[in-house]
Length: 312
Image (cartoon, rainbow, N blue to C red):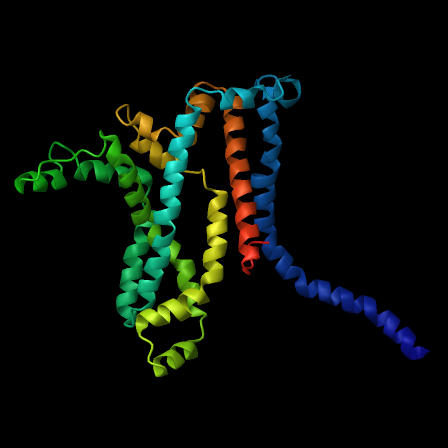
């Protein structure tokens, strides 16, 4: 009887000690929790203006309710097919070429055995991530300028003519893609390199004993070892499928390539900021989010069907 009473009195104190022991972890995640709550979830209330003729002076509660009129306007917009086509083209190029680039770089860096060389190469590849798009686009304009540009001067001296990627629409998408790869490839490879570091080295040793070369080791050990990371990153990337990046494409845009560079991000800038049509621009943002949500749910279901963990 005394033992039972003693156990009963000790149980609450043990729970209290358990809570106190985990208190530092709760404090540690608090800033991240507040960030997502304040900047991700609370702004969702603003989607209400998609169904209104929003007037900043009237506010959310007093603005006129128009239902789905803004959505009808978007889908019947004369430029909607152009915007959709350009956005999907840029997004497809990003998925097909930019997404595999960090994986390929990580595989190459993982094969470098001299640590000092690998560290130098990694630092060089990471550096462009910290350069703004303003600097990158300005540098490109300087290099390819038709008047005194280094690249065009060299091409002209070699008798190959000159190129002007900022005035011809066929150069826009390759230039956008190459700039994206140059800026983000190194930074994007960090996660894959970390995943490769967790692969058991005894697997490579056993493969060498069996006579497998470096390429076969990459194919049968390294890639399967980071497959779960690739799947998760791919699914998450689909969530931002229609996020082309306003700053980058806006800096590349000019009247000569407008038809090839006009995407939903630039359209939102014109309608929401310049024309102050906030409700209409909110509809565009919701449309992009819904497309991303559908792609994430579909890709996650497909991944789980093939035996992968997915994101949930």
